[in-house]
Length: 70
Image 1 (cartoon, rainbow, N blue to C red):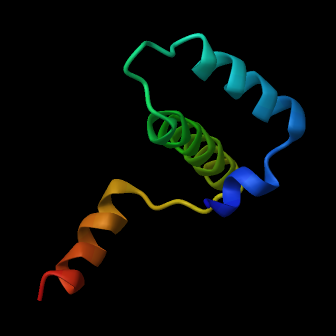
Image 2: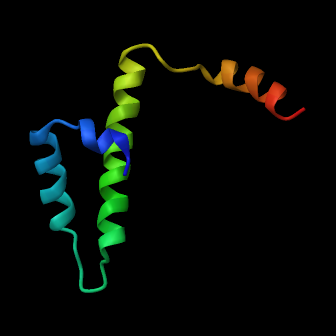
């Protein structure tokens, strides 16, 4: 289980559950529901990290990727 979902505010989780439930179709699986919830939680976590200054500029990523691709 994604740790982000465990730490999510209850109201936010309810909002996401309703949002995902409204999109359920006949062929939607439980895995599809989980994946969508995990994606929404990851987006929230990423937005929080950016607000906290825990992100890299495009230039920094390009510089770091040079080391990764050696």
